[in-house]
Length: 281
Image (cartoon, rainbow, N blue to C red; front, side):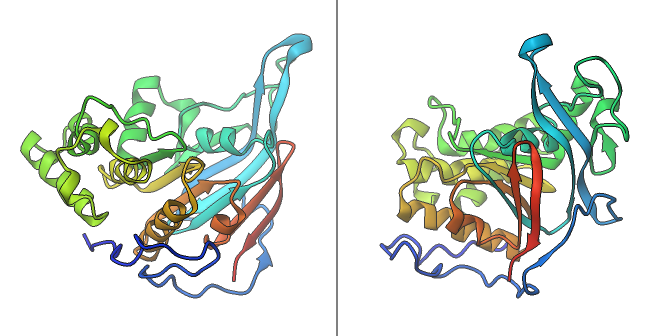
């Protein structure tokens, strides 16, 4: 795997400055509307079809997502923005198979067309919990606002854990691969350091390395810089740019407009619906 160039991104920089040392992202077409792009193609990796998500029941039911349709193709770098409560994170969790959409309304009437999420062509409603867990572990890497590292484990062990679970490599191979991933993010000197002895920025870089451990088809990031200062936010932004330039599919939910503008496609949500879908210049 190519090394992420972080040589220059550890120094202080202006918040609005360009990403020093990051890989060049291919030029994109001028901004334009894409519509719903709901049908999908052979390149489609994730697809939301008329997705509804309701919480509660009776008088307390809340309609979180209201018929969202969205396609994510391979090699896309997409940001999802919108006010709090607009349904961004709920949509992300559904796309990643952490939850399933509702198939009918609060009175039990089925939605038409069926409310469904497809991961690489597989309808999450057709999979058992165990089957869905396998799909998640094989095809999806998750990055959250809170890194969720296991504090009693070293950085290397935290990155290796998803590989241990997948069972594709031996334990020694998993640890070697974990070391290689951490080296890409300039953390080779922190391999044996326990997670609770790392800085906040280092912890998030370890979390990104962990998300890449099983060579996922897509990275799903929920407010990945929400707990970071501007310097470390720029480091994470540069890492995402470099990964996207190498062909990694990324879908990122963020309130940070500057970070969202780094993506190649931006989805804007309001009140459980998509109100804008555009390519960024």
